[in-house]
Each structure stands twice: as structure tokens, then as C-alpha cells.
Length: 182
Image 1 (cartoon, helix red, strand yellow):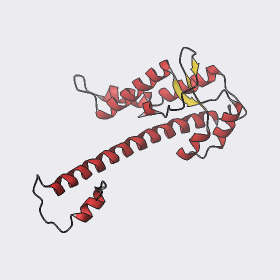
Image 2: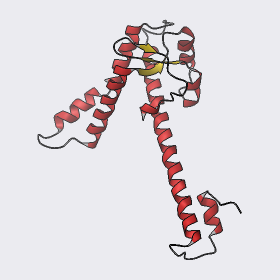
Image 3: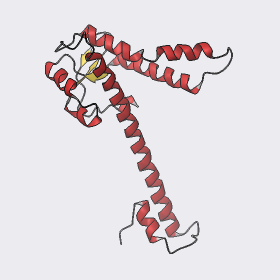
Image 4: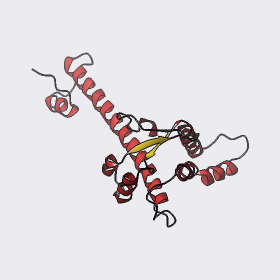
């Protein structure tokens, strides 16, 4: 008989029993299923966090290319793209400075300040090595990006590139699915 892996199925099998011995076969089966369920939920939350970060990044870039001075542009230059990236990285600088100034001397940084600083440091290091974003150098990608419905489901149609601060440009690998955004 196959072993049930889902926690729901195992719990249904064990409804009749009131107490299980810690070394019982059914107890081990229940424990294994609950650990599996926890692992699946953890991976699901990580995927959702990554997806949310990706959508946030795309929404910011979309807002930047939809500004009145950029509406008529069909493609963007390297310099314009780098300015958009730098604006994205510095979007929380005012709040970060405010948190630093309100903190009393000798006190540790708040959790919010640590989170903002860590995210900013990560984005700066990503920009130095290659910032992942839609290919705004391509006319078709800019057109599709402007038509994007602001949902994660529409991102797959876009072509992505990595732009480095020093001017490097690279096409990402097919298996590069924004692992670093979390």
C-alpha cells in the first residue's frame, strides 16, 4: 500500500486514534508528513516574496518610463537606463536618513533601518555586477512593457537583460529566474 505524503491524507487515516506512541509507525508517518508540509509552505512563501519583489521592481521601472518626458520614447539609452536604476536604488534614502537621524547615539539600529540598509546594499551590489530588468534598449520589449497589466503573469512575455554600473550588458541565462531578488 502506498504511503500517504500529504498531511491531510495522513490526518484522515489517523482520525480514529486518540493518542500515538512517540515511536509508533503512524506517529512517524504523521511527523514526516507535517515536516514535508512545512517545507512546501516555506518554499511557497519564498517564491511569493521573490515574485512580489520582482513585481515591485517592474512597477517602479514602468512608472519611470511612463513619465511625461519619456512617453514618446520607443527605446532608452544606456545612460537613461542607469539613471532609472539609480532612482530605484535610492527610492528609500529619505526614510533611511530620517531613521538614522532620529536614532539616539549609542543605540542599535531599528529593524526597519536594518531592512532598508540591507536591501539598498544588495541592490547596489547587484547594480555593480548586473541589474536585472526589462530590455529597454529593444523597441518591442518597451512596447510590451507599456502594455503590461502590472501583474506577475504578464512578465513572462518580456525580454530581460542585466546592466552593470560600469557599462556591461549581458543577456541573462534561461534559468535565471530572479533568485537574487528575495
